[in-house]
Length: 532
Image 1 (cartoon, rainbow, N blue to C red):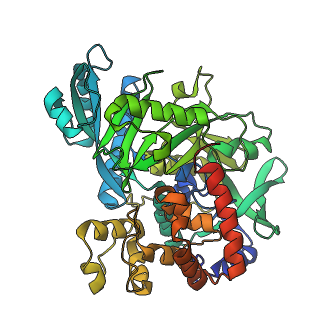
Image 2 (cartoon, one colour):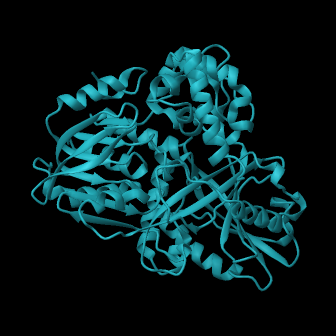
Image 3 (cartoon, one colour):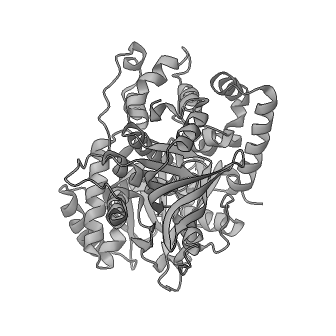
């Protein structure tokens, strides 16, 4: 059975059967976020027998709850870390080239005020370096009158003007799915709701793992040359089994989503919060406007959904009102929220905003762990991890391997596809790649229409339900698609149509649908709505 068919409805049993039949793996990867996905992609393309496991759903943690930005990191230039900035900008350009429609250029605007920092000269000096690494000039300064034309609602008092530059924006969980699909095509077995509960050792050396199925409770023992711990903010849990000292400082970042007509922005604004001067982004995403992020310690890390607090909500509304006073944004405008936990590597900084964002790799006798780092540089992180794992892998291949991450996707010949608007064609190709032909083949006549309130088609729900390892309703509405973040009431204003799709694509009975709906409503109210 092909590994990429293991995500089809009913395919999980085949994946578990394959797992039981294999006596030995070259590499087991714990963690189904962007870091684990990148490692699986690079390992599988090298011909390694690769098993990736995620104890929740793919991208469940940080990788579905980021700020959606693929950026180079201007802050690294200011801190003197030129190398990190250079690598990040180059990876950003690579992703925009390979994945148009999923990783796209977004304009960024920084307003300059009298007496404020950074001023136009300092900021544009940093951007000269930024653009040099990209090999393109994105920066441009606008005097006050022209800048107000770009954003009529912006705070105008003492405004000197503003600078425009560029980074990129993505749907982070869809990016994880695209990377995992590439790993599958090269033979990786990829399973969600299956976690590493215990390490197996031969003396002091890690030689495999005990896996626990979180859906059935069943356990499996598997052997491997090396186990990679790519669980991000949770990395200390597995390292603790090797008596390693804790190194992770979990930090929570929260966002709110509001209707674009209430806070219309065509580009991302960087606003300095009036309370602490932290930079906050106010940016367009999937037809809505997002405000974020906070940066707070989150020491009580468990296996539950991260949640925004009321203090964070007030903090984000305060900066939006300060930067765009004419919009008069209020709590009643908020459609949804999300909170994610960043895996910062602790250096003892006074607050999490001062911690470095680069990654670290640890080798504990056959358990290779990685944490920290940026979404943008996941490919480089994966290569560093494989270099650390290489001494343990008996048949690690020599030679050079292609750097391209994604198989080029061709536009389908489907006449309905050619009839779609150009922006939607680009989006669907970027989000689904070679799988788009299957999506179109299964789409009903009216399912290529956009779901009101977002840029997702009904056909995307049908395809994801049937072909992307959906086990729960929250998998479908919060990660495969983003309806739960973009549509009022977590998308359940369209509950009847969603129920029909789940019934037809997943075979859910009415009782199963009610069970899943109740579960989803609880998750959405507690972690994606307004905090109590």
